[in-house]
Image (cartoon, rainbow, N blue to C red):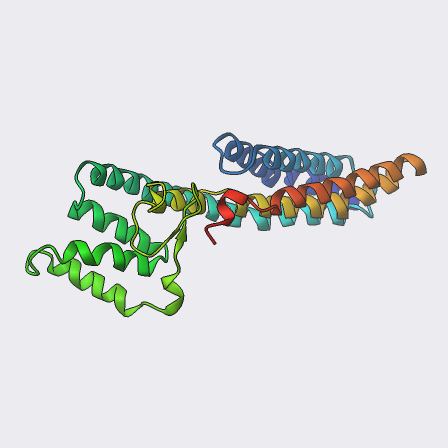
Length: 265
């Protein structure tokens, strides 16, 4: 029977390596695939390993609850990252479909199938006014009996229109303002919806911010107490400053504004 506190803590120290291993492997994989920034991913993986080693060594039993809290917060953060990754995979399919549709339209303007494919993707992503403005003029060129199903779908979109849906889109290439329904920028002819889709749906900002918040929290709440308890006064002070600088730097990097994509909002 295991009843001593030391034995229990040793078992817990071994058990935490399962979530830490999943966390480290996932962050490294997503960094390689470009799902999150490489620097943020590698820092998160390294800090996870440091937390695991600190729990195994148990330098200070009073700090063990903080270390376990870091692991539990890691476990709580992982489902959100997993969900984000899944959404990105679906977004990739939508972008591939939109790329194919734009290619078909460049070869044959007015292609009904390609136009409706772009309109449906725009609607799914909340660009309701753009979806209606893209579909309506194309559908009006065909007999109603031929496009009856498409017309019903488009009318359902119109019933959901609200004033805030009618915002223009700013071109990410030349900053021209484009009204709903523009497939190509009126200023530079860039594929405006496709550019917005690539930037908005496949950006790494959400995952980057989530991992950065975890990094900053662990560095501040766990790293500083560890340094203060294990190191001599002057050296501990240096590490405290380093941990604070690391936390501030990571948060700045994660929450900074991407100027190229900011214009879309």
